[in-house]
Image 1 (cartoon, rainbow, N blue to C red):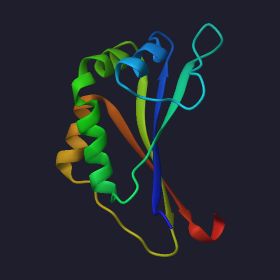
Image 2 (cartoon, helix red, strand yellow; image 1 turned 90 degrees about the vertical axis):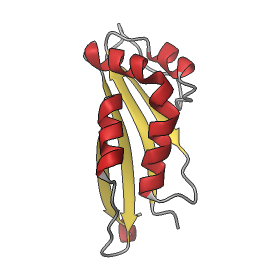
Image 3 (cartoon, helix red, strand yellow; image 1 turned 180 degrees about the vertical axis):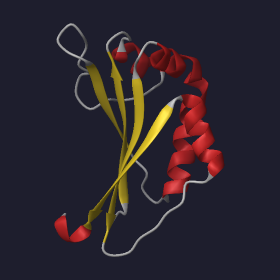
Length: 122
């Protein structure tokens, strides 16, 4: 059983998320919602089979580093980017995202959200 799944979640009222995803080679599930129909929002599922959490975060940072300016512009214009991790645990579990990776996420303007669920519930 996979230990975790992850997605990027992008929010913005002022940035074209379709264009941002296209330029950054991100494939959102469905069609991003854009204003004026509400807040701009999209979810980009990420596939990290056979990776631990540390390696997955490193892959996100590496893949998105060339698009740093676009991501910073999203933040500057009031948007948000979140790496959402859902972690499934059968009991006690732990994982580490080291300071280097956290710094890289921060430099890209990406928040890290981790939700833990008991595997008995899934």
